[in-house]
Length: 437
Image (cartoon, rainbow, N blue to C red; front, side, top):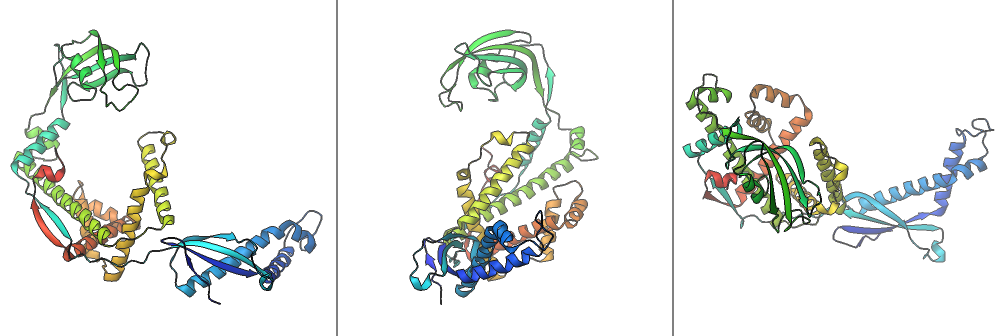
């Protein structure tokens, strides 16, 4: 008799499974007899425990085990019969006794489960993707050199009043209506005046102070301050200034170039190396933009539902990864409550995209070649001092090699999408591409 599959949601299905009570009891008796041959019970020799005692002690558990096995077997048969692609495991529920007298020897369960969505890949021919285009110029190299100089800045103690741009060392103690508040006290704190590390009025009040000076001043916190308990409130600060330091940028000279890995200190070689690094970063960013647009096109043209069981698993994985990240940063993950709803939309997006990409790979046989994997690894190795060692390191691990294969697979998907859509080139500046404001 064919089992009816009931649709109770986009991907949720339900079926009824009937099991013969007589067959269940026969199997229970069979397993109990087998168990009686090995079970140990105080006061009896092994294998001599009366079946009645074995049944009293183990009967309920064995019965549940037999019913579970029977349900699983019946469920698998139904899945094969209807060619269902089941996600996860079914949830069984005993149905109320609504059987007629002819079926009184049957136990009826309902099984509720999810199936994978049917995916019909959409038409991409009407979609448009913008390819950012830019050239690294001398000005971009100059900006990068300046950024590197700022990263290597030195500070020199000076005996004069504080000016904007100085780094100062200080103790501070703030009070709200005469009372302390969380985060309102600090010792040996460094800040660069004018950079916005503290609120603007606080930093401006430091201008003109000299090392060793104590100062009291009031500051009204902005109305949109992130701590609502302080927003719009006047705070009285007591500040002791301990030192004033002048920022000193390193000269762009031979020593500077050598510090960046140019052995002979040649500045032109240094600039050419920086230009090559920027070119690689430009290509990386362009590919990232193309990938983002390609995946969006797939999502827009192939709307599907995501199985909730997969979404839930992805949420669990994302929470676990974030907790690990907290711990790696020295933070107490237990004090960072992560609610599943915070990750729901992103998890759902990932599952949908993963299913669509998997279908695309299957339909169009977008296989990766060893040469493609090698290129991914070699491109990544260029970011390190010893590229050859990095390449060997990748090939020494199956997991790292699989990561490279996944990247190559994504590149094949993106290229396939680009071949289906209209690609329009768009000139942008280096700063625009990098998101530098």
